[in-house]
Image (tube, rainbow, N blue to C red; front, side, top):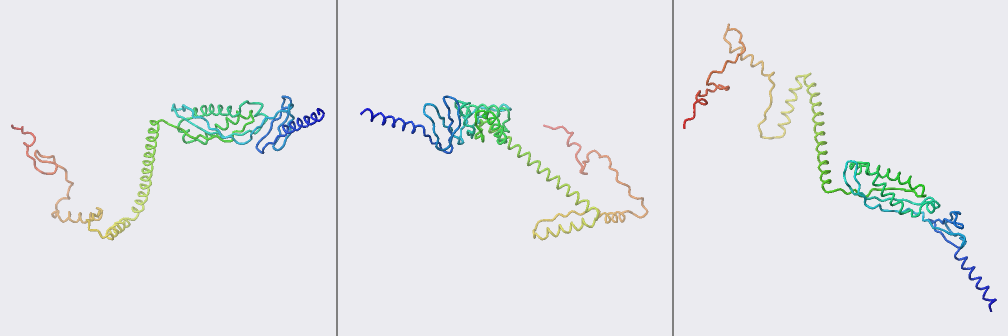
Length: 292
């Protein structure tokens, strides 16, 4: 009886050892094999054999890991306190280093990301954090990738998610943005005035070359106003050059025959009691005392 049970027991033990020695690794998994405690090789994916008691296997996942970086309190270069959170994407590219060189690769990468985030953002001003996120993301990724290369980890991407500010700082930024827009509006308005003045100066030079052109322009303006069929009074400027000959003729007729040429009028001294407009004023208007 004992002779039959021993072979069956031996077969059962061998079957259990063979079953435990067969390992199946998925496409995204690799097995780091140790032979009597020493690194042997990396196997997978698919079906592999691990000798029980002699070899040990550590599974390593090669898929990209998405990890949130906890919110960090950062003081920017211009002494503004902000709260920044980010997310990083990394994966294992060398299973041997990921198992041998680091104990907990996920926790180590998380701590390194937190310190790097505070260090990099502390060297920049608040405007850079808000306007140049792509550059900051690239800087943080480069530092993390270089530091984790010895662990067999590749940091593929870093993204800053939120930059939280105090209410007072938000109001200050809004006021600054409003002032900046007002400055741009004034500059654009001044630039428009400058360009208009250049055009008007060029038009004046063209009209001054041909005096008849200015008169034609006046007539065109009158035609435009008349076409609107309005009943308002039209004030039309008349150049003095047009009526100067008539004034000269009138002055010539007003002078008696044989009288000397008219001399320019010399303003006389104002007499007491006369105003600048030729209206007599009472001498007691300002000097007489006020009687009760």
